[in-house]
Length: 109
Image (cartoon, rainbow, N blue to C red; front, side, top):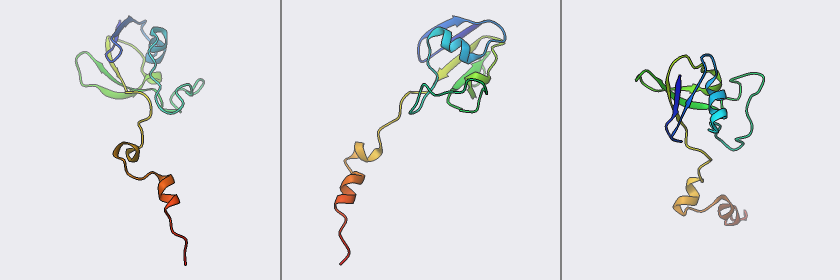
């Protein structure tokens, strides 16, 4: 069976029953997102919920699934989430940061 990782432009062969997470790791595709990408579940699959990907099979609609919980049974198209945390909106818009707000706070009279 073929598994296509759209964002990365990678197509790999997978064995039936192999988890999507195992396929991704073997292909060098990182599906973990967030502040600590190295942190993910090992013994209890699914508890950390950090391996969310969009999965479509047989031309159907893509569903948000956990890669560690998807067993490959047919050809799949996978869209990984964009990585890394985004900057806080106040840093992008030029609004005062929390440090400026605290330093400008007036003392009670």
